Image (cartoon, rainbow, N blue to C red; front, side, top):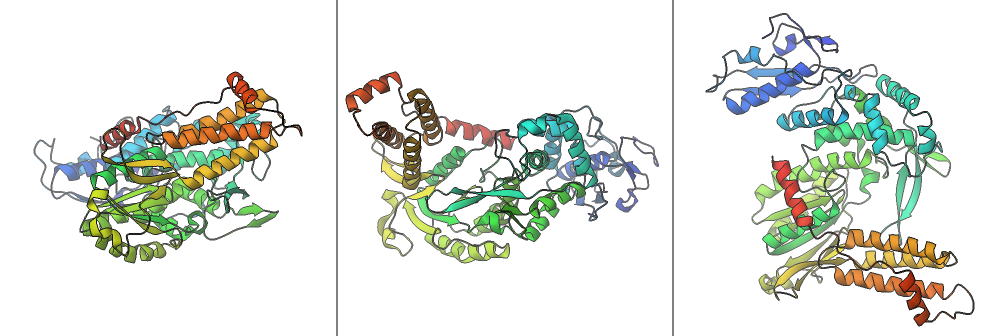
Length: 555
């Protein structure tokens, strides 16, 4: 036990805790965090212990993210087996091995694990000091994790260019970031076709250095917010995938014998994300001045398109490293927790939410619950500047065929008994083995058509390449398709894709010249020499992976 009036010199500035009710100074930040954790632990063990944690509101330009936690404690009677009675003094004892400062020899993984542990144990804690975790070693790890083959940003600087003087570049980047002098460059906008093949999706490409810094900040924020995210979200999260989302949805629908599925599409979510609402949501968990200034600069960096920089007060560019995490933080508050804490307790039947980034579906066992949610959902989204797409939001009757009855003729039943999510069409069908009704998934028609169109265009413009090179590229495209769509029950869709690719390659090989003398018999001989990969199921163990992920999060 430290004597009153003592302090711990752990490498950070000394701040006063008199406002918190103690008369002795304590070195910021980690003893305070330990105090918070001890209080949270005491709250679970003894009645009458209540703690409120608030972060420093100061986020001025010169503030480096160092602030004091203001803690209010009401001490109750010691819990049975609690060592000692002076709990108010006991929680002031520092715990050995905590993150004391940037000079700590801890590696990046250990730092992030400890932040995650503290965030998990104190879900109401507001972080005012996180930027000190980012040092040169941390930036080096972020550089290692950043994709090197991506397109260049507005500066035209490649990853190879940045690596020529890597250590100096990282040290300079760290100095600019910590001092608040870092200026986020605008992103370079490109347009890629959407799944319907008609519209395009705008993608913002940051500079490589900006990607590295965004990756570092995202790693820190991820260690905090991963503890807050719910099991219903799967997009852009470590250890989670689209196939786990599909399995989670199928299991949920099966357990509730199907139901009424509401496909929801948010209109231009990334382009309309409200900066003010995002800041309010971030204030509930992270108030580190250095990190928050960097996020603000990225939000206001603007977009370079056709030589003109456009800066908006809303939206976050798709393609940035930090954007997916910010979208998850936003929708976790706006949708996920609202559904779990407000909507689900008021349902008369069962309800289900599955979200992957900004794509999500809602399922309900009762139709009257659907009507009530449809009434409040647009209002809830509108409060945060979001709108539902009227043409892409629809209700589907997805009840178990044996449970439908007269409900099929209901005004909300819809004409289709299937729906799409993440490139797959979900529908009821009888099992070939048992003859019982099961939920099956197949490649969505639009996705299949788009993939085959891409193959045809590639074969057309690359038909004059040597056969080994064509075979190598087509094999990669086929394996990439199998890697995503190779789920149990989709064998027919994979085989169709394979057969059409075979015919498409034959068509354009036969048009390498005006003679068109390539017969199918000769083409078969070519395939024997250059065989295309056969359809393959890749995700047969997704159910087991999802179960393991769920168990690990519960521990």
